[in-house]
Amino acid sequence: MIGLLATTVFIVPLIGSLVLFGLDEREADIIMLLSFLTALISQFGVVYLFLREGGKLIHITYMETGNLGEVYGIIIDPMSVLIGTVVALAGFIFMFYGVEYMSERNIGHPGGKGRGLFYAWMTLFEGATLGFVYSSTFLSLLIFFELMGLACWGVVSYYNTEKARRAGFKAFIVPNIGAMIGFYSAIYIGITQLHDLSLFSLSRVSQSTKPWLFMALLFAGYTKSAQFPVYSWIPDAMEAPTPASAFLHGAAMVEMGVYLIARVLQFIGHLPIWIFRFMALMVSLTLIIPILNYPVQKDAKRLLAYSTIAEAGIMFSGLTFAALGFNIGLRAAMFQLTAHAFVKGLAFLTAGTFTYSLGTLDLREITGLKEILPLNALSWSVALLGLSGLPPMAIAFSKAELVTSLRSLQITHLAWLPVTMVLIDSVVFLWVSLKWIGKNVFGKPSHKRASSHWVIDTSLIILVVLTLISAYLAYPLIEKINFVGVVP
Image (tube, rainbow, N blue to C red; front, side, top):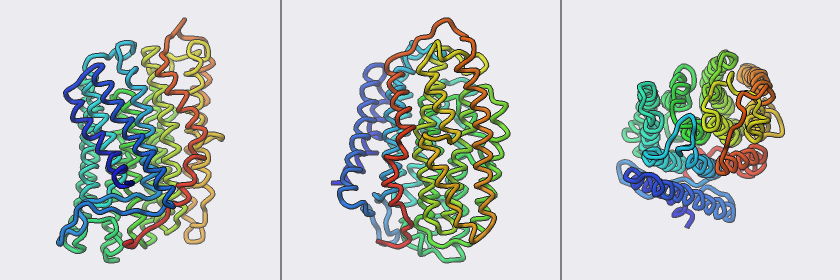
């Protein structure tokens, strides 16, 4: 039963996306919301059955051959159940908001007709991401990875301006290069040496080959998660409609690069210490980029885009410790991913309300929100302070778990480097956030009046609550995340 539900989670959105390519307006609204809602209800069913059955790993093989071993299957374990829930819940909230955002009442981007195409791409995005989360083989990971890239191209280029088309192409091609290097290497080794394409076969890769295979897959994760030096596609991708930006940054594209490497580390076994040193250096170089860019950003979405680069880097900081064999690194990374999904979604959807209600994303033109849009003033403040890592927001606890997991110092003092960079990033972002909160929330009102909508307000309220409590909801599953490394 649990296997059927887990499969339903991603099959329904994939089918729904095909239907939506031929629909528009109210019919498209209904089919899109039903697809996302079905995925969410199915995912809640997976959570219930998984916890009832003890929370142990379940591996289901759907397709197997003599020469290739497992070709397609799913893994239901604490990591996939947790992240699947994050994707399904965040995706539904973002697209519930999206129904109103894509309407003709949006001042900055009047919508209405033609939104069925956007829904189709977003539903494909949801299905591909959930399929990726549950996949147990490199072939299926590659297929869903590419489908995510295709959907990302579709949503980023949706407005069909020259800038949007260029950004969409860049958002597709850069991660695709990483996919070719990482997944093709894994599939080649699976075919020629292991005769098995399953993640479980990673523990049987020779010790001489293992570090180089990991490095190839790490590059795929870096391109997906917009890490140094392949980060520039993510600020450009802000051409997408805001619900897509929220999903892209908060629960899908960027996070799946982190999830991929967490999955590989979970199964691959011992890695040499130079892998840790390389990852620690790359995380530190990545975090320099947003630290330097925060103070000069004037566009709300571009500020949040650089924040995403940093937050993904913080997730990779956790994975550097996982590369040393500490399961606390896996847990910290997945904890950070979970907490980040909702606070980043809140930040982007609030920025979307600036477009919807005020017709601008220029932070210099947005002042006095506490008087003209009180709820938006609250959500913008909570989002920025939450991303800075201040308690009681959930992301404060995920960052704390990373910062306090310094047992790796017993192995190498280089472990101080990524932790120090995480702290510097948080301090700089907090400084910039306080500056914009002072202007955007408490400044002299820039508009005499502004209207919102109950759909948008409801979405923001739900995300504010999740920003505060998601750490507590997620922790029982996070504590069950461990290395696997052997065939069950």
